[in-house]
Image (cartoon, rainbow, N blue to C red; front, side):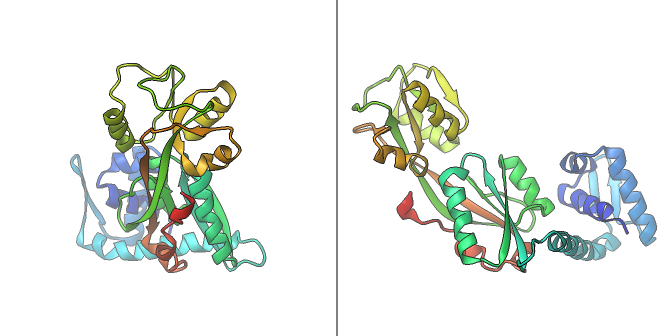
Length: 280
């Protein structure tokens, strides 16, 4: 039996639609259809009722679903075990939102490395869509993101928060508008709070979608921006950046999401969700 056919069957069940499953798997709809046909022929049973409206499980498909999940989970574990470096008992795969790695993501993975020294670790960086897809496909076991990642058999917990501090390359108090202000898009909640705290009509001369890019720009060109404290605290200590006096601070929530299936090998994941608030 083909593992790809099982994974395709699970994707169709999850998405409820052949087109959406094809997009998730990065294949054509005809490939999805062919894999399902091969699987049903091998089992001698109709697993899905397919229509233009979507796809629904038959009775046989419902019975087969759990077995397909177990087989694909076993395959994931076997794939990781075969690739294990010598001296390690298992593999833990971690995903991190690209804007959370500096500070929060690296700190969390270091805690895993210290507490689970028998595990080989791998880390992947992506956006929310990437992380959700990787969790659902089993590529990663857990992910740190600025919001919970919802999906079948995915669970999330509060992982703390990041302080977002307005800093400048030159010491100054808060002013109504800084011509050298650089806007960093730190998510919808930040955008809402920022607009309430700074109700100005001017537009920043530079906007970045990543904190690291904005920081590199500030250090090279000068100016001010809201940035995560975890990322910049050492630069404040070095007096290369200066918190703007009397400027409001914001926070950004952090969430750890993990696969239910990953708890078999890594039952410690939920207990390590919360980051140390003292370093934030």
